[in-house]
Length: 235
Image 1 (spheres, rainbow, N blue to C red):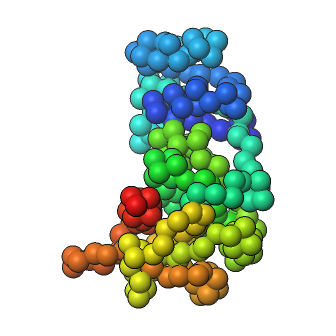
Image 2 (image 1 turned 90 degrees about the horizontal axis):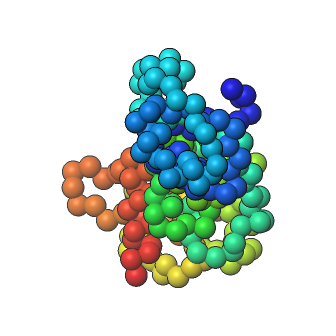
């Protein structure tokens, strides 16, 4: 397998890749049960999977990978530049969120709430990987994932396109539910533990927090993303 290609495993990521006409698929290894389960989707792409024992996939991916009998190799998706995305809706920006599990879960929330794009820095963010694809549960096929060199400049570019920029901060004075959420709007999420960097905070139009009354006042960044998107879209 080429390191330049995407390695995708698990039912939901593989199904969404099969449905994505932008995906050029080079190979699909599947257990007999998995191939039978996805027979319609596989046939729709005109593919003939290589039937293998699940142990073959265990050896390729490691014992902890929940591959569900499916392993695909496909050409990496072309992703847009920031100036190529639609200047509408909600954009999510990540300030040095590096865990591929978290970024994958954030992509899943972005797909669920029809986010325009997810934006992260080229450095201090995870590469597209099998772990990220699995955590995204197919959402990587649907949400543009933009990489930028400088987050502060990306924020300014969105401001120039009439986006209002919210920074999520557990100590912020304003609750997100009280913010005018009319699009276009962007929300910036900081790294676990460190939160937003000072330059990022200074670049935001508003710092906002989630209203939480329990003894723990912060959430995992992927959970915070889901709750924030719900708060911004429910009105």
